[in-house]
Image 1 (cartoon, rainbow over the protein chains, first blue to last red):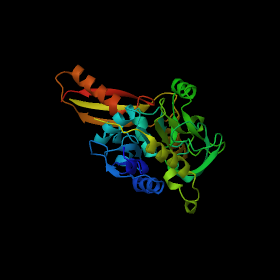
Image 2 (cartoon, rainbow over the protein chains, first blue to last red):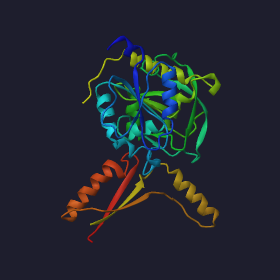
Image 3 (cartoon, helix red, strand yellow):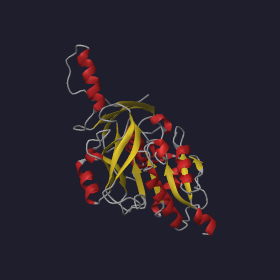
Image 4 (cartoon, rainbow over the protein chains, first blue to last red):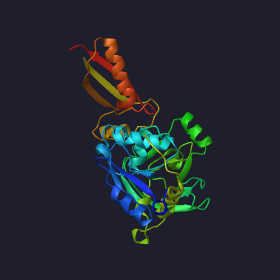
Length: 238
Length: 80
């Protein structure tokens, strides 16, 4: 990896039909020092030197059947899964989180909000783990203020799976007391896989990277991702 | 062969859609309980035998049509 590539790591933003926060994610990541190409879902390969992948928010395939259920079978997702299997960093935001659970890359499922209302507001998040590539820049026990905007963000796992997720310490973010916008069990807002390289969250860090937007707390998460991408070894994915 | 797949939320799982529908039916004056909302998928599948068709549709359910964490499914087959 040459110095130029290391300075601006490649973070690929996958675009599905119906994704709508891809350019926000691209903008935020480039602000934070990455080169963030948007990649159409029919591509078979990730861009050369991809150091991290982001699945953005939106309504892929119109949320038909179930949110993320169809997008998970996109050609590019094969490359994303292979990338993750080799330890590559993958971040799923909102619909991206839904795609990752449908693809069985993250545990649980995102269900309709308990209120059946679409919720669009800032939420306070409790940081549960600061030893992941995504939360390394957070102080332990700190809170982040980041907006959510979703109708199906209620994370659910059956009792056995929930016990496993909690025992493995896979919950990375929880909604602060009294601030759960969707009824998610355990106030779960974001989870990581067992290996810690795949992370999904319902809130939108890309919408909180500038005080003008109300909060820059999202930059703490995305900045950590870009830093981790800068340090990650080049993966050869076939 | 025509297949009809009924996808239902698993028993015991909270179903807010069902609750909303139950509430609305109540407002309309109907006395109902335990309303649950699922989904129907109709399709035409090529298979030699009913057993083959059923096996194929089951795989469709496991891979795409239902989320096994929260949904169960039933399959009805009809020779065309």
